[in-house]
Image (cartoon, rainbow over all chains, first blue to last red; front, side, top):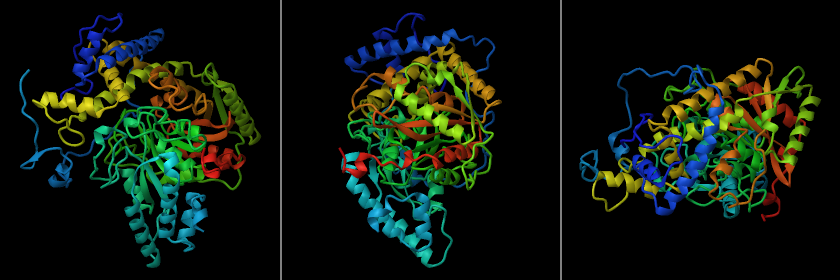
Length: 111
Length: 493
């Protein structure tokens, strides 16, 4: 799915202001979710409440503090060499739609 | 004989089996019967693997008859949380998204369980994708607390905790991202252990927040928990975050003795919000540790209170990225009647994810958006550094820390329905431990309002064995872990 890992995405929201229902709709679009009118209202309230709490982080002086993205200082990466893996048939076994050894999806259109 | 088997510890069951006093098939059948008897009141399991359990047991009996070596868990029934892969068995993660998904490989911990001779009896209920502290976010109904079936068992490893507490299995596997092993262990009166980050391979665990997730054991006593931990821990090349350290083999002395051991009590963990009776049980636990020779002093972890806020940001951010994989293309649910692939993504995710999962994906997507990325996401990671540094500082002076596992006892089902702020706050004592990647164990330390209370001991990074020794010493002189819940003795409420 095209929503990226920690790729910052553009979101037109005015900072320091509460999120509106329109902002919530835009976030849902980025997250590939469709919210009911009820969910839109509820999530608007709840995200604003949560952000209010999260704002308390602002009380902490973090000037010059390095971010800790991970508890381990080092991660090992395995050697990039071919090895036996799961057979194709098994890997495709749980796919909703398969054709000629590939995952099959509905048509891909622009826009 | 069968009636009594389910009351035995893993260590006792293994001994009986190895000595030939009971067959593995007898054990498997006794526990499967126990599941059948208790499940209608408990709902701890999403899948019971009765056939493969009996088949494994037959193989074990044949091995024993042939004089082949038997593993350290030979003949011991184990339940596995439904976000940990067991080859050829349905794995739902508590979500409609994966309601029919059969995973085609074993998690490393499951591989090791099988090699050790464990009999896997089923997959346990959980909050959807491990998001929750009550079990109520499962798409397949809520697991009940065996101490009071009108109350939550805690979460997210609800079924694993409840099944061990109700003596349906002696051991279970859970996962802990912000307290999901320790908190349900506390609320159901058993031992739950979250190892140091990197000690246990995450290969085959459905990722929630990859920098916080850790697999660990549930048991009724520390000895059993340590036995399971020593089997699942140790380096795994299939997990890039697996630490290159040997598997620990915790050993326990003949007598409990904590002379010279220094425990710190971080005052921020005993502040407002802690139930007075829970606090009283903790004070008694401190006195018990002192009686064993330990020195206990107050200390301070000033940034821990911001750990909760940082977690509100980090968890959804990582979760929203991890759950991006559920798009209906390769496995799991796919929406029908869609015009194109874009609509398929949206409809699949909208239909497949539950309410709490959507909420956290929304939060994560927001805090990772470019306008607020530095303000929230980066800031949270900087606070994470400060939380971890606080721990490093106090561990220069102390061997372990004492806190409540949960500031309160199990609450009534439905009480916090759709009140995320209040539910998240219940994890205030457990979350900072995950942020720092430390080991922590919850052990029963008494009762408040007639419900179990958990004592959390937090240890130094990769000193998990030592931490378990402290917890073991405490259990040698206390009886709380031996008290049975009403569901076991009265036939349930």
